[in-house]
Image (tube, rainbow, N blue to C red; front, side, top):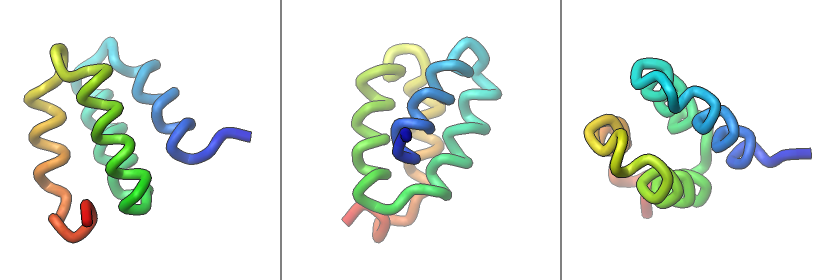
Length: 70
């Protein structure tokens, strides 16, 4: 069985063809994950999609309260 983090990564890869869908799914993912998983997702997202969706990633991850990344 996939962990929530792995499931989210799969979803983000599948919707990465559409900027709007990608952002919508990323926002949902950020709300679901615990801080440790959120750090991992952030690193993974920038590695996978940083060139294509840097603006979206910056917007979504800066909305997250700083407390969640400690």
